[in-house]
Length: 84
Image 1: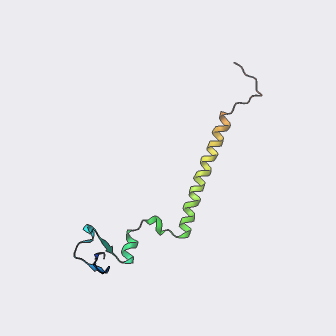
Image 2: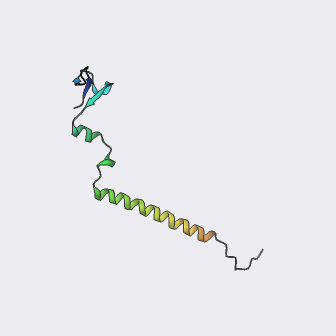
Image 3: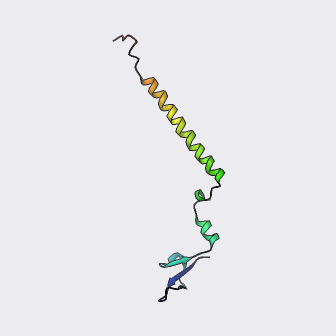
């Protein structure tokens, strides 16, 4: 559970009765509370991170392939006779 604390004149942390959601000084909380507040993105295992990275590479490769196809379709062959 989080606890609101303040610094006293001797730079020691002193617990206050202020609720944590309205605290304007410092908050001390347990490690499990801190982990619960973190984004799930930072809790990925290395294997999950590798899966995300590979998915991003596949999307980039597919976009590049589509770009190359569009460029190939838009190129004009100068050796062919024009019928204008």
